[in-house]
Amino acid sequence: MGDYGMSGFGMWLGWLIPLLFIGALIYFMNANKKKDLSARDILDQRYAKGEISEEEYKAKRDAIK
Image (cartoon, rainbow, N blue to C red; front, side, top):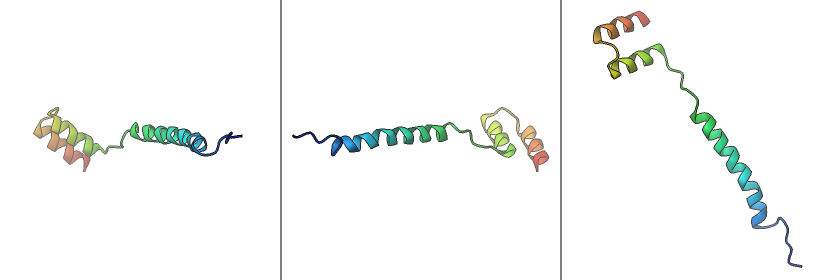
């Protein structure tokens, strides 16, 4: 008597742990994906970081169009 088995809290915990694990797995898989950057985006980033000069930026920007 008094043995409720997997009813109540135990039943919810049995479902909750795998769902949390699957949710975390999906989150980290999506977080690690690299965004697809266009050539213009990469060029803009390089110019913003100071890796290329304004003249080089304009020349490459015009070549991309």
